Length: 159
Image (cartoon, rainbow, N blue to C red; front, side, top):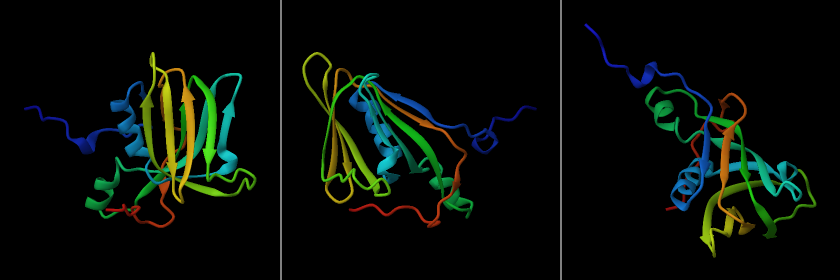
């Protein structure tokens, strides 16, 4: 007799996702909601046209399992990279203090002509990072093993 595989039998692997349209971006935005990062971990490589952030994201995809199994919530370090960036602007973002910690609340894309557009990263405290892109290409890749969330709690969401 054979038995169907169970979810619990699967191996967890680091996330590596790519968004090429607004629907894909919504998935990545949900996974990086409440991610935190210091100002020093935000980089724009003008020559390569790449904007990247090394962030500590809450593992939303694991939260139901953690709660059901009464184990600790987890975070993981991940790189959020945006390709084909032509211009970066920010409002309410003090880059002079490299230790300043930001919290990413949401990401949204406003399409323009011929696939170009504006990707906005909304930060807690009314900060915004706006990226003018030639085409939408956002990559989220986990780069460390998960670790216990310092607060051992899931972030709370505004209603």
